[in-house]
Image (cartoon, rainbow, N blue to C red; front, side, top):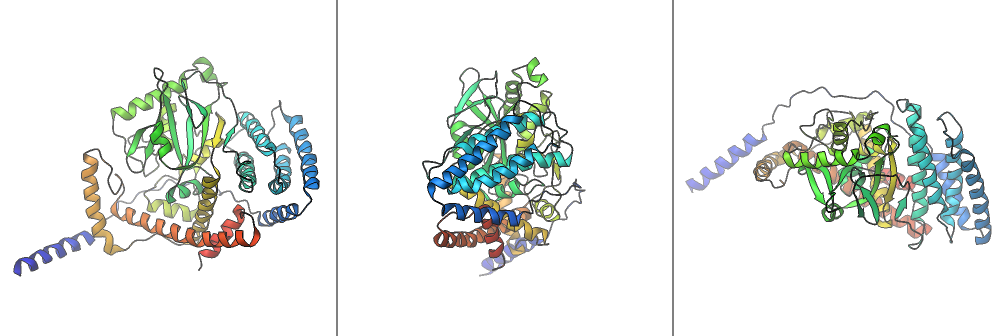
Length: 486
């Protein structure tokens, strides 16, 4: 009996010791002083949905004729400007945005859709990527134009896709056949080259946060650098994971890791540095491939792209190209929202002038080659984004992530166990570099996200049963915002 009591007292003593908080070193956060982009377009969004409902009730022949006339008008405008450089001050891009948003709900309502909207969008973003090579992207107004077109028109196209039949849904969009001298391989039918950057969206809750927690909220949360072995043409993907740091994945492993979407980006072949050395992308990829084999590179929770001793996902690509004399993310990403800063800092982030995956799309040194997603993952992407947007509103209102302090001793035991696993080259329950308290705050974040998502999904189902169509993104956000107060 005394032995049992002694064991109980020892366990209780250890438990109490593990409850003692560890003093946190005060660090100076690198913050931005920008204004986060906001659409602030509630009334136009409502009008778009009203136009969609009205178009669904139009005779099919009349609707098709109206769409055909509007597409001819838009094609004529684009044809006038194609082949010449357009500045951000020109009215062209805002005119295209306005006209495309007018026609999008009508196309969405068509029973017999063509793929005109996809082809038009790809022509527009190809032109913008070419034009932006001459733009001063350090100006906030210029970056906003680039964002409005590349993100905004994609959003409109995706709303059309989500109202399409399975036969009409286009999973792969081919955008620019950017020339490359680097070794090549195929992934999901898309030709990729060594040195390409695959920007993707993960399926985890934190992936939604990374996508949306930015001054320019986007659709992507992860970056992988493609390396293709010149002898075997076998592709490998060098990427940084929270769970294990920088690692190399085979094609099967890369595809097995759940992704809601991905986009292939490639350095422009007309860059002076690539004209003098067309194999530079392959050399950059090969350097990073070998570097990740030579040393263990832990995940960089601080998101400090100046320090290569640890790396987050974007840093893998930027570090590889920087070594070869090419600077990606020339204009770094900024995170200025107090609520987002507070929550990200809870996860260990200290640098809020950084390199966010979604912002790579707006880098004028890169071309968008192709993009992939399917219907199920596309809607999940939209739903997760809407839930995250609602949570960010709560963060900006002052809500903070927390944890149950009585679970801290258990988390510390798991952290010690994870340390042992990591020492033997295995993945721990708690990732390397993540403190126990942060792991518990992550659990709080996941629980909030999942609870809100479940409530939002209930409203989505009710909407579909009542209205007979998939709710657009702005409705998803409203459902999430309404659910958060329940």
